Length: 266
Image (tube, helix red, strand yellow):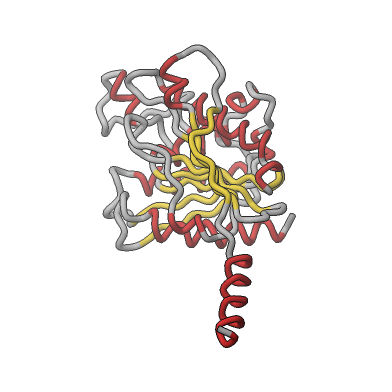
């Protein structure tokens, strides 16, 4: 038994060093009377054990604004971040305004609650895949959505959309009987809100030949327009050999590198 004591001590020490992260699920970020909003406007939070001033990533799921559900990607679980994963209301049960408004409300919740989970309002990054990338770009470029909740969009540390729609989202166009290949740029297009003083923007897509419709080219045009306006910190990456659905996994590596770069400058 005497010989087992060092092993028991080592196991106890290892458990203390690698304590399980704090994880809370289905936190409501809506306090109104709409039953559908009450159902959908919930989020999960994952925080490293004893986190202090850690970066926070608000991660919006994909699903074409018509489906999908909150998730915390595996590659973000072990990165030392506080991760917030919201659900939001979906088309066609609500118009696109409600989807964007929910995304803004969830990000505002993150700003108001960052410190209690070991993060900081100075280190909130917003990201998401596909429809989540679209929501990321919309609330970060069009200031009015976050302003409604008392948050300045430019206080976001960076916008990191993965294969996000930069023209008007196809789910909204479909509700207006606009064909999928008929491009529209209006108030519901991130491209409509290009401005030089937006937060840093990191655009990531899959292979141009394997992406959904012209998703790479939309993002390339967004990159070019931001550059032309004089935006000081915008970059674009495309992942050869990865289609629209597959690109998210390798894109997390880019997100992690960009968060390291941006936080080192703060």
